[in-house]
Length: 304
Image (cartoon, rainbow, N blue to C red):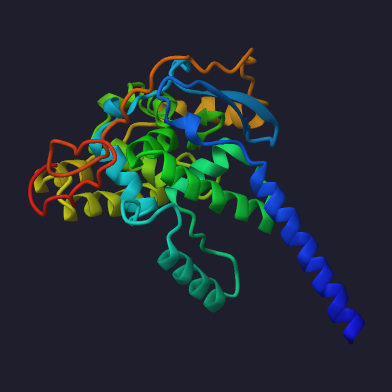
C-alpha cells in the first residue's frame, strides 16, 4: 500500500511539473491587443482536416467591432456567457452549475466555457479533450482578461466562431446565410447566428434542424427584449419573420460531402504600428462606454 501511495505521489508530482512547464511555454497574449494584428491559426473542416485561417483585418471577411451590430454582440453574450462583463475569464458559478447538472444527468452534457476561454481555445490550442488542454485554456483566458479589453475579446470571438462548413466568423456567416455584410443584419438574423453556436454541424445546423434553431433564436430575441436591447415592436417584427436560407440547401449538402479548400496563407503579419484603442464593448443605453470600462446594464425599456 505504501509503495502504491508513493508511486501515485511521484506520478502526481511529475504531472504537475509537466503542467507548470506547459503553461510557461504558452505563447504571449499581449499581441492580440493590436487591432492590426494578422494571425494564422488552424481550423478544421467537417471532415476533420485542418486548414490555415487568417484572423485579422487582412481577412476580407473580417468584421471590426464598430461594424458588428449591438444586437449581435448582446445576442452572443446573453446566449453563451451572461456573466461576460462580470468574470475575469472563468465563470466559477457556471462551472458549479454545470458540474451539478452533469452529475444529475450522469453525463458531460453541459459545458461552462466562457467567451474568453473559447477565444483562447480557438486561437492557441488544439481540439484535444484532455485535462492539460483545459488547464491551458483556463490559464490563457485569465491572461487574456489581464491584457485585453472585453470589447477586443468579443471582437476576436465573433470573427473566429464556426457557423457552417468552413464558415468561420460572423462576416462570413452573414454573407453565407443571408447574402449581406454583418453590419446589415437584422435582430432576427443576429439571434439566428447566435442560436447556431452550440452546434452548427449537427444539433443547430439550420438545414437539418431549422425548427430547433428558430426556437432557440426566439429565446435569444426575448432575452434581448428583457434587457432593453430591442424594443417591443422590434421583438414582434423579429418573431414574425424567419431568415430565408432555403436557397442554400444544395450548396451546403455539396460542401458537407466534399473537402473544403482554403488558399494557403504565406505568413503571419504583425504590423509595427502603434496599438489602436480597443473597440467599445456592447452596451445599453447608447453610447457605448470607453475601452477598459464595463458597460452599464442594458436599459429595461427602449433601444440601447
